[in-house]
Image (cartoon, rainbow, N blue to C red; front, side, top):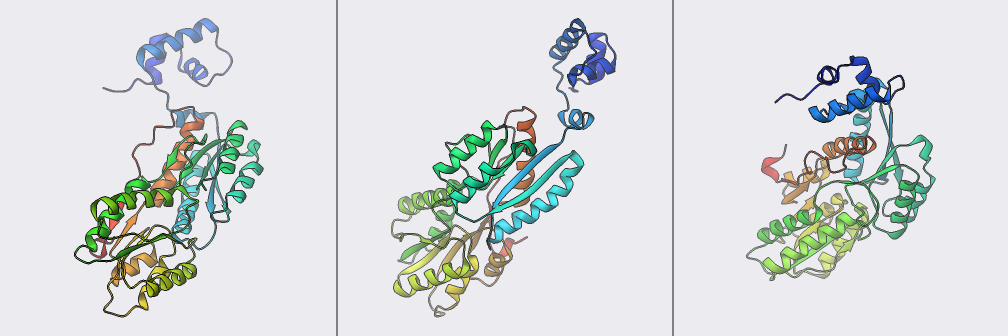
Length: 342
């Protein structure tokens, strides 16, 4: 069944195309009786206006900002590059996209930035959230000033954000647990976790899912308390190397944040007869190299380009008054091993 067009509406209402266009774009010059007739025709036909075309016709511009953590996190830098490329394409749809960086894992800095944003020059914001009350309050204040807010990669539940674009991080943690448990099957020993920070929701949710699977399905592999590396490869390397030297019973490592270079460097100093299985996140040049040389066993990945494009689309839909649940598909979790690298 074909969708009704503006021509069908004009024919049904007995008016010209220009009259329908005026009604759709809420312009003057149409009598109330005629306007009512057009609106009734729209309802009868089930006409759905093409918002993109309508916005182009009235030259509506969208002004969006993406707030990302600064620092050496390879995935965030990949996301930033994707944003630069997506911003160029978005200009064709009258959408300007800027990237703003804040110190990583710094809830105060993120909240301060949200409060300082100029609501008169901005329509929507996507943030990689730090899970803190002051950030929730800042989001609420920004919404009250008329700016649309969604979260990207790391969510902020309980806030007034209008949508989230990213993977299911509990599911990602469960997947990591299932993989690592199988990689370590047949060996006795403990499992180490390396996180960026428990201040971000995505890492906390990954830990939850990971521990659920390890404790129920692989109880013979006790889990030690997570090491917080704050996505800094040197800190990750030093902490993990010290823990591996202290505890010779560690047989597996789950890296749920960045700093994968530090993981690889810590493992490179181990004797050749000590086997450590590793599951990490995000397919970056460093994790790819670790897969190829056998240091990592598996990498869970999220498609950063798809997340950027979906976030831009979601913000535009919210600003157009559409339901914020219209994201076409959830962001899936990709599992890469050495033999299926793209």
